[in-house]
Length: 177
Image (cartoon, rainbow, N blue to C red; front, side):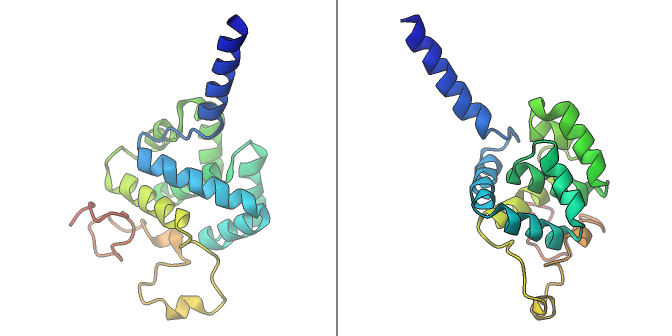
């Protein structure tokens, strides 16, 4: 009987521990699981996409994976870096120190409060990526995009969060305005 309970506990802890991002938002957690699944199918392409999306060199992307991040973790790290305008190295430091608390606590530690415009922007970008809308673009695609924010994620949250952007950053239309 003890063996069955022990095996059951191992199974349950493996399922929840293996893919738990603990953002505090079930929809965001589900989107991150999709990003993980898709990213692991072709990790090289996923890493290349991160370099293009966030305009960072491959060594910075590789640094996130060297500390044990999954594709979903790496995406969260770069999104938080982008939104807070802090270097990815700062996010990696927080990740190494606080990963057991989950991304919700880490985002809060980095200045992104739950329910804030920044949190909705983070959630929207991850959700967009999980639906396949964050795929690498052909070299001339930025010229075809009238919103001006695709392929230039570094500037999306840089101004103010007073609306005026493309309206895509909050993902569900529940940001300001």
